[in-house]
Length: 127
Image 1 (cartoon, one colour):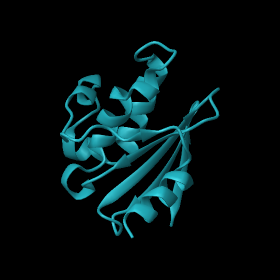
Image 2: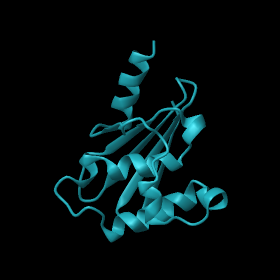
Image 3: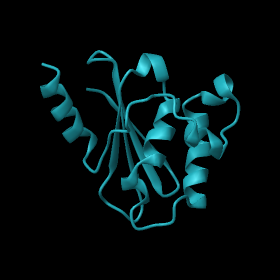
Image 4: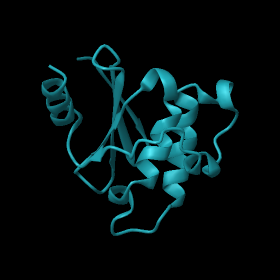
């Protein structure tokens, strides 16, 4: 399992390309000052790509618990991540309306666990 880690402001993100396991992709986001990360399990990655991540994490109830619905630092993080993932070339610049344009009919799978914990659980369920 290869994990890429990047940091932008108060946000740290880890990526794990698990397309070899049932076409899935994992994203772990930690935002300061919180220590417990949010890990998104994105299924059908070849169909939806990275764009679905934005819909899944920001509509999840876990992300908004105990805070304003959408803070400016979240928007800055989205702009950075959208560009980092190369989505500008494919879909144009990020706009907050992208978050409301869910591509998948599947409910978001957002866990308050590390990427390693979700990977281990996912790996067991696909064996």
